[in-house]
Length: 103
Image 1 (cartoon, rainbow, N blue to C red):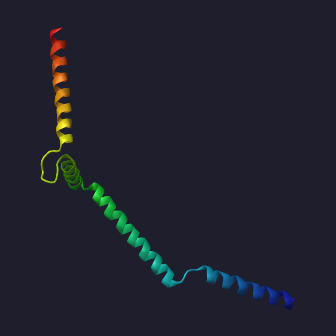
Image 2 (image 1 turned 90 degrees about the horizontal axis):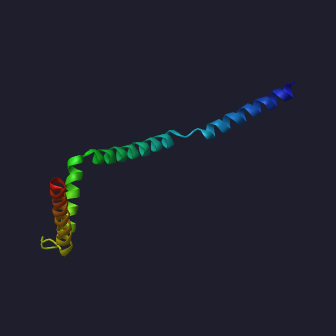
């Protein structure tokens, strides 16, 4: 009986040692918490940028102007071509509407 008690006691200590090793230290928990806070802060910053509609619209406008003009601020040939296509489409649409009303 005393032998089984000794074995049981040593097994309990072995389980306790394993549990102690499985539990993270205070420093590990603090480091993990700091990392989670940092990631949460980044996520909040990203979400706030997405929700800033005025800033996003201003950025889109600036990108469009940069693509449509050269370094001196003059429209590029591609911009003139695109404007010509849009103008032709508008004129064509108006002509079709007028013809449908008369016909």
